[in-house]
Image (tube, rainbow, N blue to C red; front, side, top):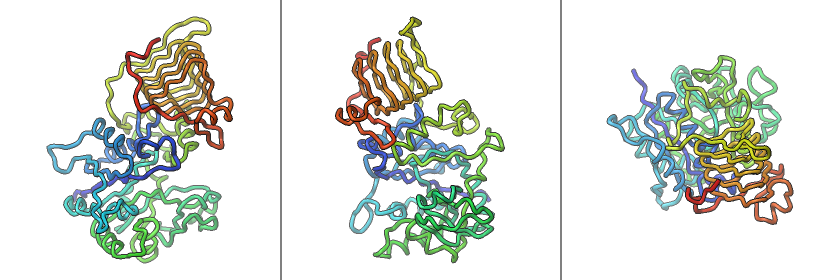
Length: 418
């Protein structure tokens, strides 16, 4: 029997810790790695795993996300079981409220599950950067005859206070949950690591519907899977932890480690982008057997112009996306989004530059994130004097990453002069 799987992506979070990049967009819509959006990774995991029926639940500041989904992902099909459909918040609760928690988000769209009538429902978050063969998790779920399976990633025990930790038996059955507890039990047979919940779940459909109805009737509940529903099942139901480390991606070496990053803060987001610059990055974007899919923009190739002393367009240990023009400027150890212009004499060092930015002549940037559509004036210096950066209204993290907010109006092509 072919198992019918419905995918649901939770993409409605505010992403407040990623401010100011989430000032005008939902966290899953934040650009990443030059040409992608964060949500592209979970959707690519679903599609590459052979799961083609997917609802994307949106909520806060969803316009940018909806636009990206409409431009980049094919909606509709001749087959009714192949679709990726964004679902804005419907306010179906009795009080017509926004989603109160992850479980409430599904409950308010429970009609979509009932109409699809799948055997299993895979509920995943849309705000992490990772590669995962979801079919491997589903096979584990079926093998265990599980009602619920929770994806878990081993982390060093010293980080237990930062995660929701899963306590398991030797066979993976979940015995308990420990929320941000530094004394949480370690993994069976491994005293140095704990199992951290990834917030990705596979449910038997009948079990999911029953749990949602029961939780909706609980007036004191936060209506959240991790806080309320799953802890009640621990040790009582057929609920198992799937070890993310066992996920294998086609086209990757057998000894490669699965990649997962929580890009919930500016520093984590910056570091994940910097990961991509490595000669052999842990996140391989060049694996054609497991592509990261996104919008297919009709961009021209990147261009590097001038070959004169102190005026040479070049990039070293960097990612440069389509339609970029390095017009006599130098880029080192950086990630450039689409249609970025770097003018003569400019230096961009250890930076993440989002789409349509224009960096003026002789400007110098160090450990800076430019949001979309920023125009940096000639001779500007950003990232070298943090007090000056703050006075100029830029956001500066404790580690010294400077974020320059984007302009609301994009730079027009006619304005971009070499």
